[in-house]
Length: 224
Length: 128
Image (cartoon, rainbow over all chains, first blue to last red; front, side, top):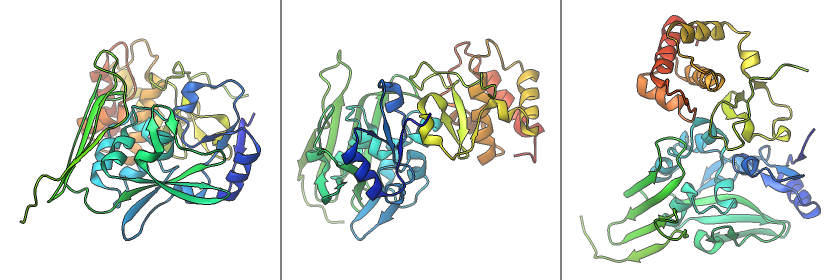
């Protein structure tokens, strides 16, 4: 009956990943819709390192198996990210959906990934060889294209703790809840520069699907 | 083998919302959960919930305001309402709409369902 492997520790998960063709499973909201025949999953929800939100001097570290509901309730998660993930799916989807899954499935409609582009987030990947930290733009290369090596798991999303306070975020979907994003925009503004990320046109009749684009221009220095 | 006929498959799209269960005390769409992911977990479906006092209040409220038409969405609506009231026993209308969101009623009987949840919250005062 059990359709996969339940890892109790990160090391155990990495061993299973190397020795089997199991597919990493965090929340399941995308994988279950795909419904791959005869798939074996690697269940990640019991791994403490993937379930935690922690902070250091520079970054908020969001574990790959942290759900959107958990992040919304956490005081350390930047408001910009909360605003975007509050609009994902529905309460039941946000109770299950995770940050690792949202970027890991390589969808070009992933709402948290747009914020990661806007925020200059970093992705922490882990394998038996150790950890690797990459800029989100170097990891998420396009629809279904990730720089994820064999034997690697997404461990954490690193969002800057400071500099995201002033922002704008807009999402256009077909309805209020359970709305797949058609177009979304996130802008982060700082005193001396304006960094805008992500005009994504997702419906074919509006344009070609694309990855978030990023445009940074130093407008002028402002002194308040 | 327990009768779990109320756990519906929301066409494997996680859209309809009728395929719903409470898992680890939070609402999940059962069609989006692999069985291996819930080993060792407590799963409550409508079958278990309807044995409770809270369900009796919810059932009466839905019946009193005729919040059921075809009935397909009702299991999801009731478990979403239970999840909402267990966290927020006295929600306002906006909070009820948010709590039920994701459950599509193709009979478009939303207003009656919202009234039913309000009525359940009033009449079950103290249960949640």
